[in-house]
Image (cartoon, rainbow, N blue to C red; front, side, top):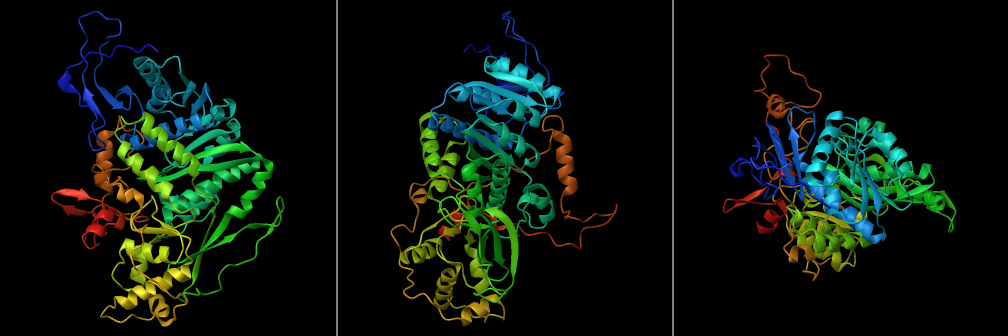
Length: 555
């Protein structure tokens, strides 16, 4: 493949990306060369982005969206697409990027993934197509990257690709049906959702139901519930066409979720989805969750009604009421064989990525995850009983000593995913409370009711189990990363043209609350400042920031 000669510019006018914390964009004025080379042109007011093996240059006059914060999204997508091609032993495949925007993802696919014959970089903006054409020529990918000016739904249905990448700004709900219908049998569907306020909010359940056909719950594991709601939505769309969406990898990263599905044609397996689709009963007192599947297997190919509900009017642990959410997917979120292939693909081919340590940590955490729905957060469990937080190795040891499986969640530190029933979890917590009494008595409520019950689990031991610390910790992998820069987040739709506007908007919206409008001149002084969420907390040591999980372990 012939690469174009890069444009000549003054070396002190551009800053290359070194780490995720470095600037991803740098304004520069390019100087025309005196050598007369045909590949040298004169540009003014250009924003240059260097990511992976690609370089893109965007004119600020064009209405183009580039999100620097999504570098890890693009990196992990490149590794996942490459792993799927290797695993399926495919070559010369077509990849469709339905919303290419600046085109950096499509160009990077062409440069960094082996086995791609054609990458269709589609967008509905003529500015984007202009940018894709110029940048594809700059990177020497014209023979692979094919720009397309079309509606996303139309291009996904009309171009039978083996891989479809759907990364919209907001919800993908309106495009999922076209994606699962348009893929080749055995193809890969990669999708992002950034509308987390609805998908994982709890306060906007009606918006989530309107888009995805499920009600979220306001719980600590809301982001995993968001993943499982989206899996349910994709699965429902696939089943309508006699297809099955097999979740290969389901991730919550930063402010969005990113999922990988293998789509296969199988009317028989489509019927099986009912046994992996459930309602969630969540106790408002002790935070326990129970699941009501919508169907059960009667014989090898016959399914029937499930019996329910799985709970009584009041929680059997604490006597509190339940909230009901879902339906969600309660089957596996990851294919561990795919995860293993992805890990090897990363190590063999992508050591140059800026985000390599983070992706390595995420993949290892996912490989360790116990395949059960949702998780408990330790500080929340301890707050019910008004007891000091139990160290993670202690509760992991207690669960492992009883013969159950336990793991962290890749979503958040100080969490447990476990096969242990919630009644036994509370027997463990009850013993911890008895061993670590607090001077203030519990008031009537969930914690008080739990402590009044007798334990039904003998031989609970907090003695350190050999597997109390997971391998990802023993190997000192990066598992949970703090936000690397100020105002880290999804940004605005036009990240090139509206930099100043986005900053003005950020300042104007500080201190505002949802569903609350202020009249001009109204003061906010009487309103207390909102406290930071547990996920945003960090600890300082020797002027360096360490993650909340590390801080918990060091304190």
